[in-house]
Length: 233
Image (cartoon, rainbow, N blue to C red; front, top):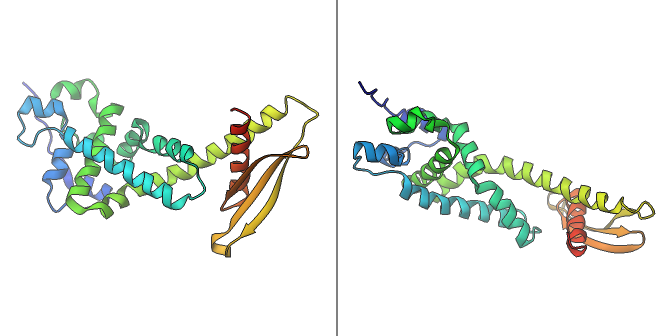
């Protein structure tokens, strides 16, 4: 005898999302995996179309936030940071924090093979849920959901990237013990709540990179990044 699929806890998921749907059919559609839709001939269909839309909404929100809040980041760094925030690993993590796995509608076979914990299914479900929020409540509600998860990741990702720039440059220079690096503050402007700093990194007495940022540390890291690029790394 086949086990019946348990009802979806829409209220519980809405609480986790911090969003109440005006039309819950969007949420139910977002939680419907293709295996369940095929097994049950579900009229709403699977969440694949919502996933397609959610992928674009997620990319736009992240790109817009990075562009507006990090004016000193070059295009290449913007692209790399966005990629880290919209990848399968990140979206799967967002789903796990929301407890999406427990609410998914899966076929019996998919359930029995561990589908509720599969990274690809959870990542796709997050994008579908984001699209559902967007369709039901508009872009600002979608933005609230995304930034709740993404902003802490941006801080962590950029901090890690920054450490890598300076560390990498130091490691390269240390191969020649007679060489020495120095970071020199060359400019400071703006009010206290919106400072901008510029820094040069010197190899002995030669300037090998320049950078700017909202803090001295950020400016130093951007200077190190430029130096690495000029050195071919």
